[in-house]
Structures are given as structure tokens and as C-alpha cells.
Length: 488
Image 1 (cartoon, rainbow, N blue to C red):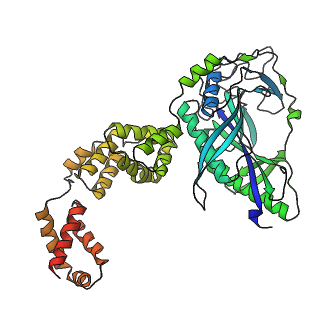
Image 2: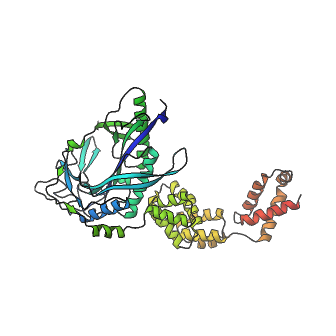
Image 3: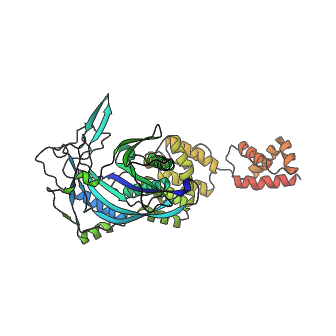
């Protein structure tokens, strides 16, 4: 059967640690698990000691409400915590306090923009089934031939967001994950640093043949801490399932792992059903009532979200693509806003940020979310853009100045003045140089006059080189055409 007879059916589970000062059910401080020494931010509750009583973190509830409202969810008036029972070394008390049949938010959606590898971009709505609060587990560390447990992460507030199985490709899964990550960053409830495990994505994947009338068996790829890794794992699992069915085999319900180095999926264990978790209401916590006034108050405090910011950037003259790139990471959007505040033209600024500046960041392995740490401040970028816009320097010189600011910092205008890089627009000086170049390049002049118009670019380059790259390209082009015309 051809591959286009099959369609992927994907639902995502996203686990986002919330940026609260204390843990979900105790006053124990939250620390970054990859930076802090192991087991230094623990208390009796996170260690599962007997006789402890949980207390709900009100700030975590507020953060969860913010996410639910940003995802257009309904906020039920009552939500309740439950015990999810399972035994694992990183869960010392043998159960996790989570939410089950009364979650914090339900029935939402997120509109995503998808750019397939082959084909035109399109917009799609993905429904959000629920968002619920729970406590995170500890962390297993495999080292020195053994396995150790770090309980710093145990009890950290965790928001789990579950989509409906509306996603039909790895590209759509990637687009949803990126948009949701941006929303969490804009809300200030999660920093989006997946390398530290504060945001983890688990795709649930099955495939459906065009003749099917119902869903087939699904698998789950666990704990993806990179969107690109999740994308590759999803593509691989879709392909694996289709090959199994086409060869007459079947897919078993299982939890899978993804080895990014080997680009390989591995079966970790067979999936549990909800019944195996033996959910029941948490007896030590009351039902949480969310008043309609509180919902309205939280809704009124929501900041401008990525979709709204993108629309505003497009209204400033940016293309949809540029606006999407600039709003994907909050740090980049904030940087761009800073450049605009410096008086730079929006379109020109966007071009310089998404090309020359991003190129330097890639070259030096600087992640876009760390754009605030570079020496090219928004004020410096704005000054550079204005120098180009005013004609004080050309694009080639601006690139040189940008590289200098990248390495040393400083004011672009001062660098231009100190190094004598101001653009030459004086026609007489340009004419003199052009005459010298044409005299030294007589063979190319003859070829151009003989009809080889492509030689014009080489002559143009020779003139710019002779003038140290500082000449105004537009003036050079106009004068060069005139001088060549005189020789016909």
C-alpha cells in the first residue's frame, strides 16, 4: 500500500514546570535541578515522609489559569486533586498528587501555522482537551555504573497540557510545540529551556488507513526535551508503524524512548491503563473553587501573546514569515521591540536581525533565547539600522560594523567615525575611481560593450573594492552606466 493511504493520528502531552518560588504542596524552594547540588532543595513532603500534609500553592493555580485562558479553555468552577498510584524510585511516597476527573481547564484550542517540508503553509486549529496541575517527580541520574536519585525536582509545580488527537504530521506537532512554548514564555510561567527538563513533550502516535473507521493502537514517545528531537522521533514512529502494518504485523501499545545519537526508537515498557493508576480523590486536600471574578481578574492581566504580537508586527510592514520568526521566542520579540524603541525602521530592522545577527549567533552557538546576553544591544542595532537607512554607510560596511560591535560592543556611529567608514557619495570622487578602474580593465570593458552585460557586476565589484567598500552602491551603479555609455 502506498504511504499516502495512511494518516498519522497524534495527540501531545506537554509537561511544563511552573516558575513559582516554592513547590506545589509545600514551602520548599524551587531550584534549577541541573544547576543545584543534588538533594539540597528537599523537605519531608517531597521526600514522602509519613505524617506530612500538602497545602496547595495558590501561585501555581494562578499560573495554570493563565495558561488555560491563553489556550481558550473553559475554567470549571471546581477542580480537585487526586492520587495517582505507581511505584518508581523517583516517587518515594508511591503516588503522585495530580488531577484526574476535575482538571483546572478543559475544552480549549490553539491555532498553529504549519510549514510542511513540501507544500504551502497553512493554519490549523488543534483542540486542547485539558490542562491540569500536579507535582513533578524526582530525577534519576545514571553515573559511575549506578543509578542515583535527586529529589530537588520532586514536588515542583507541573502543568500537564493534553491535546485531542487532531495532529496529523510531525510538522504539525512541531508547530504546536513551538507555539505553546512561546505562549508559556510570554506568560512568564515557564522559561522554555527544554535542555534543563523544565518543558517536556510526549507525542502519542497511531496511524489510520484510509479505509479505517476507528483509531488503531497508539504508542507514546516519552520525555522529549527538544522540539527537534520530538519531531524526528515522531516521523520515525509514524514510518515504523506504517511499515509494520504493510508487512502484515501489528503495533503493540507501548512507551518508547528516542535515542537522538543513534536516531533510533526503543521500547521501554508496555503502556499502563488509567485503571492501573488507581486514581481516587486526594483525602488531604479540599476541592478548589475558582470564582468567576478570579477568572476575570486573571484574564485581564494576560500579556500580549505571540499571535497578537505577530499581527501587530505584520501591521508595521513585516512579512508573515518575519513576524513569525521574531515572535517565536519572547527574548527575540523583546529585542526587536527594543530596536524599534530606538527609532529604527521595522522592516529594515527585521531584515538585519533575522539575517546578519542570527547568522552571527548561529556561528557562535548562541541560542535565540539568549539574545539578551550579546554585546549588540537593541540600542546599538537601532543605531546601525539608522546609519544604513540614512545612507551614512552601505550594507557591506554595516556588516563590518556589526561584527565589530558583536566582538567589542560600542556605538556603531562612533566606530564608523573612528575607522573612517562613512559612505562615499561624492560623485566626483566616484567618477575618478571609475575612470581608473575602466582604464585598468579594458578587456572587461570591451566584453561589456560587445554585449556581455553580466560583466557589469564584475566592474561594479572592482570599483567598490578600489574605494574600500565605502562607496554608495546606488551612486556607483548610476555613474558606472554613464561612463560605460560614453565608451560605446
